[in-house]
Image (cartoon, rainbow, N blue to C red):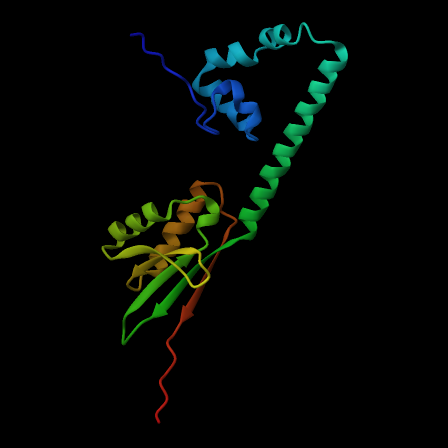
Length: 185
């Protein structure tokens, strides 16, 4: 029995022939050109595009060109909005006092940047030799809770990680939450 191998796009997970329908066509083409230059030439070279449009009428070609331009403009606007949304959001690091001299650090706002919170909590756990877990906060969003007073180290690690991803303009806000004192009655 003959085995076949199929190529799927690393950006949109479609076959490369269908990347244009994913909404991420520009990124898909860049990936395909780097990862599979022979397939890129077969699909998107000038010769293959002229051969594919050779039997189309002039009006149809113009219509297809307009549709492609619309789709590319839509894709660019979507990417721009996503980047603005990322830059407008902020990472919140809360230092919460538990009892006596015990503290935990709650980190929220990272899910907007596409960061895997479980992997990051494991990294915190191993880096700081302490417990770290992913929990849901009262608003229903996921946050990372790190045991111990390691707020400065967490902030350094997060800012370093955001800089690596080109998001160095993201604000990191630190707050402190103290328990309410029990009144004497």
